[in-house]
Image 1 (cartoon, rainbow, N blue to C red):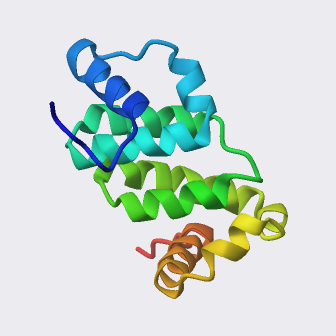
Image 2: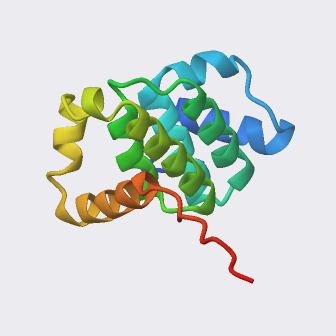
Length: 140
């Protein structure tokens, strides 16, 4: 018997399933449940199943909403893997597009309660929002 204290049985089953088959049974159901998605992506990151983190980031980013984008942004920041950085970038792009609405959510307020994350996210968001560099006229 192997005891794993940091994940539930469903998460362990899904992680093993993906490791052996490269897919998940009931894939849509898994990614529709934010709690299950986070648990699975956290376990995949811990056990370095980067393809599952990448798959999850893609599925999650396709379903981002104004209500949940800040939560996913915080999660991606905490996960800290290269695959999670892609989710973070998608969250930032979504938040930038819907900034006024996103700023009114509880998730946004919670995001900015963590000063370290808030500073990093603010810097990334400002970088994402800056206008493109102006093209200088060539003088010949």
